[in-house]
Length: 417
Ligand code: HEM
Image (tube, rainbow, N blue to C red; front, side, top):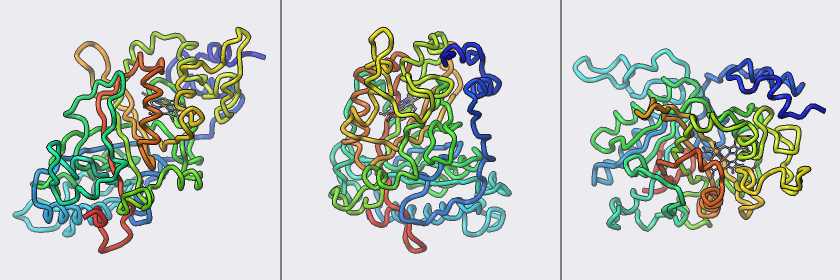
């Protein structure tokens, strides 16, 4: 039998692009299903849970973190009400305002910035999250009378070895994750929320992402991250009803009743030194993840969705999946059963002035309790993952994303305020 490694080399996985991928598929005699055309319809905005979590991951992201710049609780709540109405409209492919993008008063700015006029909804979802600093500022001050509602699960993330976090692109009072299959639609949505929030919030930082790096439904093919590996194979998915109940959605008995039906989001901007990665051998790259690059199968297995065998040894007596392999260190069996729903995106934000791309993964993961899920998994990765030689975490955020808005009259933050 020709080894997969040999097959990859023979079929030119070292080459970039579609041709190489097609060649690999042909070599494994298991063609990947043709990509379905991107969904351009509307995702329902109202529901038990917020859209944009288990919604099959769209291809584009515009994530924004906001600082609240008013001390006036009523103004903040009013803005959240207006944001909700605008979000309900925009996700259905309508303009942000109530008077119409091109209607309204000639002397006043339009109610919508206009750049999404005529575009379909493009699967837009808008998902809101509340940061720890909204409840209590750095000095411990209860800014809006909600300090007693701070969920225990929103405990500040610890420092992890290797963290190189930049405060100006970390944390924040509020966040909105806009995902869509058209980048213009996602950008338009964030821009209009910022416009509506003028005087109440200001954008602290934002992140554009292209190319989802995970699947959140078994109906989706697994995409590749910028290291060229399939990402999202063993993600928690929409179809895993029992697991979602246990590990994705918060419950009233978890401590913060207002978060029942919500979920906690961890965001990490992870810079990849792709130039160094690109000079690393295929064998080393595969050993680092514990999966092969072409098919995405766990080492020692043939198919992407085969279960990894962490006890299997190679001819040299060494584990097929190394002790420090990413998929071993992150696997639930070695992290007290913890799963994550990963929903990250690739980014390339120009260059760093030193002849290198400023590229990486904007990691996003939803879960019921980060103290039991993200924190232990990241601890184990930060301690031993060989991938750390090629990546650096430069931004971090932790967000309480409440349950969905259930209908007219309800609004983002109603249960909290
Ligand atoms: C699995 C890439 C960071 C958690 C994987 C896989 C790849 C990958 C290729 C295998 C396919 C899959 O099952 O999805 C990366 C890259 C990262 C990164 C390139 C950084 C740039 C992280 C971080 C965490 C994480 C920060 C969480 C703290 C996981 C988990 C799995 C996984 C839970 C599935 C493990 C399993 O059950 O088999 N990652 N990852 N990853 N990763 Fe990462």
